[in-house]
Length: 356
Image (tube, rainbow, N blue to C red):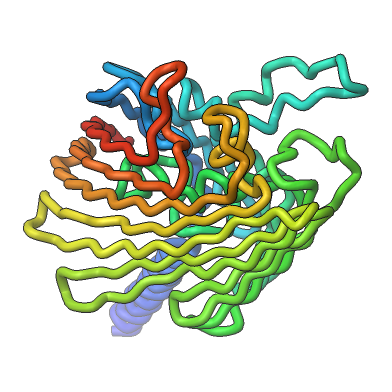
């Protein structure tokens, strides 16, 4: 009987030990499951298009005639528990336009090697805590409604505000999430679009206040001050309205400003239609040769109004965008040929985009 009781006690202890061990393993597995593991990813897109007319609006991208290519975009990213990096590489005409400031002169006659001409973004970041993130490197601008990647824009062609505002910055920024709906960002950077290094010795200060999905942006540097508002509202389940407004003061009383509305309506799971209506103005050559001098011979200030209607058909990772655009200006700024200029221009583009 004593042997039998001892055996039962031993079996009970073994069963208890086994249950405890199983609970420990289950608890450790649950903890591991809740912890975010470091991840490396490759993403990006390609885009190509056809333009029906030879001459395009004086905006960035999708401005080549006939059958044309945009860019191949490859984004390498690593996300760890506290830190990570992004290497965003671009190839092709759209990419070259996006990084136009990356091949600057040194001493007036020497030029850097072309390797930086494929770097759209290159930065590392560190999450100090759940609210504060520090970033150092080259990153796309925080101003404006539109971006360089065609995947993230509803319209394929771009606005005048986006085309003449900054594309990218190189510097240091701190993002702080005050709450789920309020955020603050401050940055110290090189001069706008000086993405490789500080060649002009002109630092730029940037700031952003985010309030419930609406963003107030500020950028100030040597002879450059810009205020920008970017936001949007869900009018209904299917209707969204985006908004962008900007004003920029430059040297010698030059300036440019504009406002655009982006209503977008979802017709089905695969098809949406959107309109961009933009009013853009410049004074004293604030938009460079866009409205003054170099092409049309006019030196007067000018205004421009453009309406762009875009369809977006999505099937998996494939996006097809037919687009019709009308631009009308207060001066003859649009080139019909090498010597003939007009104050209005209509253009049609159909673009194919694949995101991965």
